[in-house]
Image (cartoon, rainbow, N blue to C red; front, side):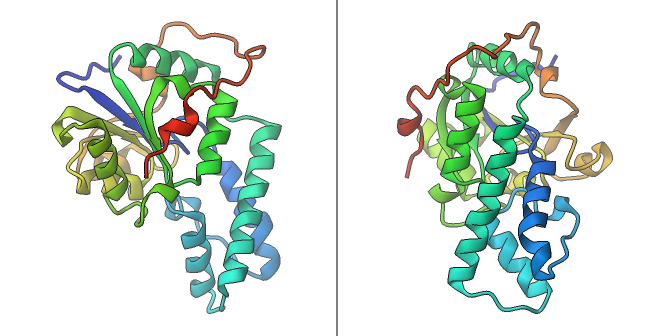
Length: 238
């Protein structure tokens, strides 16, 4: 169990931390881009970045041109495919609901993700956890995506807190660098990267393998729970 002394709030990344979507996003990119002759690198290099930025970078690496319209179409196609796969087999462990429920009793919780606003809404629809978060920001709520510190600085501003008052939970190098640049310590989660690689990153104070290491004791079966989107429209701040 991790005890966070003097911490008032916990800011979570979403993909790879709160739900296990890395393999889903990898598959979605593959299905959309490989028919165009674009080979994908290790997903770890893409984790934590906006879809459009990833696609544009992959086209550049392949020495191919992509128009703004094509970029938009491919981005929508990738996100649509990922959402279909997520709905088919939601990658949200039931135990994570209990972790967030318990943490919300002691800390202010926030979400800071490079994903689209629609993906955040899908996460809340699947997980029924919107009620636990005081603020949730997507990649659409900032000008510069991770590894820029903008999204974490914006969460701090909304919460009226200083960097020492919060902790970030991240799985990607881009996310860790984003939090560190904002002056916030990071608890890193394995899955996207190995423990040793995460521990070598400046700003990482601990590494966990499972969200349950925060100390959840029981969890609820959410099979029959209706979607809880209470307050979701008020969570996103521009």
